[in-house]
Every structure is written in structure tokens, then in C-alpha cells.
Amino acid sequence: MLSLSSVQPVSQEEIIVEGHDELELLYNWLESLLLKLEINGQAFSKFYVDPISRSEHNLTLHATVSGERFDRKKHGSKMEVKGVTYHLMKIEKKEDGVTVRFILDL
Image (cartoon, rainbow, N blue to C red):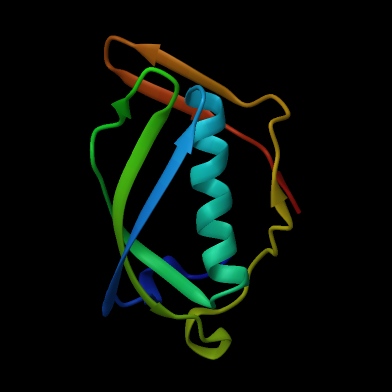
């Protein structure tokens, strides 16, 4: 979407998302980041994500993100993402890590 290396972490923001399962949590996280760019004009380059917490009914992801106001001249413009989809979304847990797959609507 933009040149990540050109985004300076000059301001911080907390983002909290919830989901009934891991796929919904992933979807809500990606959607939240996309909306911050599209609606608020915020581009982020640093992400500090706390361990996911579980309650009886929900999973919660709490993160602190750092970035700055999006400027097309400074950050460039590569590919416009219209939305996040559940299509073929997958989270694979292995002994050596986690692989996350998702498709974006361009």
C-alpha cells in the first residue's frame, strides 16, 4: 500500500480488537489497521502486540502502534486495498511458529 520504511514512528496509538475466534480476531485486526489509514489518514510502521487474552466468550488483541499522518508524496502509493476478506483465511500453528494466510480485496 505504501513504503513502510518511509513511515516515521512519531506518534503512538492503542488498538484493541476482539473476536469470537482467532480468524475473526485476525480479520478485525487487519480491518482496524485499514480503517485507520482510510478514515483517519494514519500510517503505521511499528507494532507492539501483547499476547492475546482469552475470556469465556472472546479473544482480545491489545497493541500499541506507532506511525504518522499519511502523506502520499512522502510514503508513496503502491496498491489500494479495498477490504479484508475471510476467503481462504487460515492460521496454521506449528512447533517453530505460526503461519497466517489472508486475502485482501484490491
